[in-house]
Image (tube, rainbow, N blue to C red; front, side):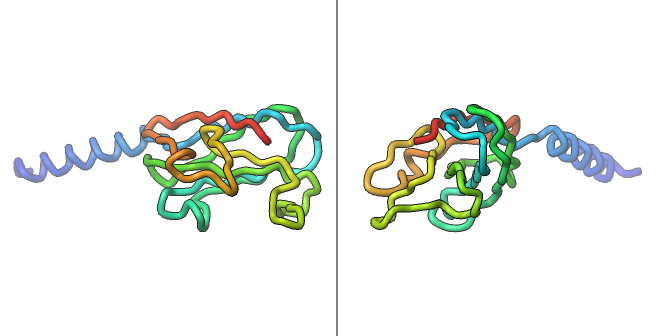
Length: 139
């Protein structure tokens, strides 16, 4: 075996080992659930898709006043979470006549809401190779 082949095999093995060790997940704890009914609808967004499609999402039946779930990110990076408690279980965020949510909702970093959803700058957080954790208080 040539020296170059040995280096290539060693580099490939190191890369495989580091990829296997990476766990870019986020542990999301949601507090303030007022009704043990319906579902938590949680969506993970990249900065580029903050106003668009989620890169990961999960729907979990509500069984307690505080719940923790884990979402897998596609890769380490900067993300934001949008979530709501789908109390009536219809799969959609209920709103009033002017479009303000009537079901509890929240964002990563408990980002403030002013005349609409928060900016990604307020809600964004880093998910490293060893994951991250967020606690979201419903409003």
